[in-house]
Length: 206
Image 1 (cartoon, rainbow, N blue to C red):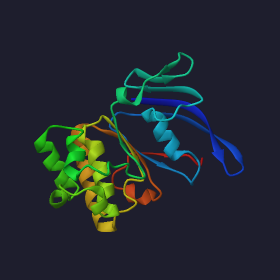
Image 2 (cartoon, rainbow, N blue to C red):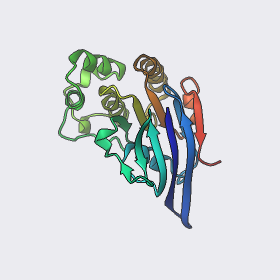
Image 3 (cartoon, rainbow, N blue to C red):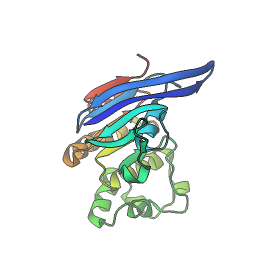
């Protein structure tokens, strides 16, 4: 169970907006996060990951306090053991596809399975500059999965993929999430693309 009760002021076009979240997310849920640009979707993911700090509130995951402003607790990102798919991919320019995965795991069988899921088996020695945008995005997803996280945060993870590739990857991920008992929070500009995978929704516009 993930319990999130946080507040964060956001810079907006006309001054400041306040992001207020109160949500309980069951273990194994796949939550899609929707809402217009600027409402704080990416900020929410970063607060859960420890990459941004709420102004107030608490974040509790499986009974462990990750953040509590009243108790002055704020676990660093490396202690939260989450997988994060960044909107801009955040790949290492000097690492090959395979090295990105080897950086996260030494399990060769798992790496090969991930490469197959991402359809990157024939590109494992390529560096990001030689990959298409869609291939870079799939690599970002695979890298986040490589550590077999219990919590996976994904920021627009399918935006660069064509419909066929996207559909195939989403179905593979659905199976993988169930197998690894992953709780996934997915920001999407196109909520319909998650119709076959999401189990809950958080609309930040409401």
